[in-house]
Length: 452
Image (cartoon, rainbow, N blue to C red; front, top):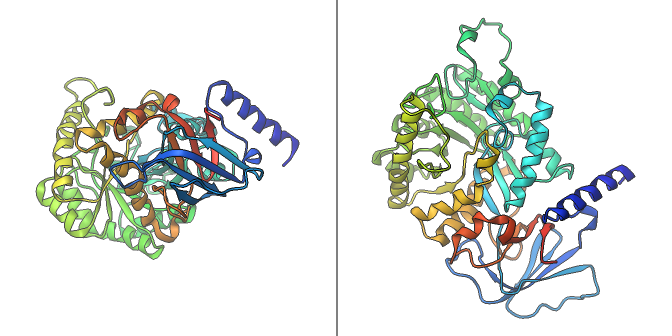
């Protein structure tokens, strides 16, 4: 490691210590960490364990015991006295946009990709400091950011990238303005296509090509737009997008690489068409009907749904606008969709889908806490840990981080949070990560420790 890199890491350490978020340089990490006297939420159980001790060696959990662990304290072992606090798995956001969560829409549409990458790296560190050690990025040019994080150049969560959202012309991923239509056959890619935010593909052959391109870039799963959206200006939320033949082209490409396709869809027609084509996961789904829920249950399709309500986390739209009308419909449908998810025991993932707002991104944990509207605190925490980890594992051989996540078990990857309190008794602890997450560990490395 050269001298300049050491100086940079030392500067990062000093800056974050000054703010109370101690990000330790990689060459300053102990070979093992022992958590003593902690109550464990293991990612699945609805209650905490008896006082326990957990030994992390390298990047895995080596030993868990209610008895004192016999370790050589003279060795390179860092002991963290838990004081009865809660040790739990790192949180997972199954619907995140690492490149677009905290930048304004104007910046996303116009800025140089280098500037966007720097903003995204800054936000990725904030994401990890909120206790989110893994995210599934379901649209955006996050391949470079992921590489920087994995290589120790930047600080952030593990990223499962989809790359660009693949969309038909006039679909949810067509970000062109009306003056750009009609496009000539030899027209260059639009700005956001060039950045790999969304890519337009019409016809099965073109979808197959674009799907293969995202896999070549490193996509762990593919995402297609199957219907319109709330924020859309030109594709109505009730519009179904793509044909079954086009969906099947992407599904076949994904399956050939051992992974799967997820789709942006709200309505019964859009969801059902995608499922008939072999799609394994649906993002959103708030406008589904009971027949659609039954089909999802029968086919074992995942519902990756977000707690969209008409509250402080709702994106602002002018009263009476089409966007606002759609937003209210989705908000009303959220209660119905969660009801179907519980009734039919759907495989349900949790995520946020934050876009274009650093203020909203900072409420990532608060958006998780509000899930108690539909689930018990234990169920909420299990959804954001072990259940979301099960969805991540569906990428099979395209999984960029082989190993067990979302649980506190011997042999699992050491993505851990030490929480000052009992999050099952008080779910709102996850909404206050700065004070309540006293230790944050990812891949066996300590990124925050304010109890030393």
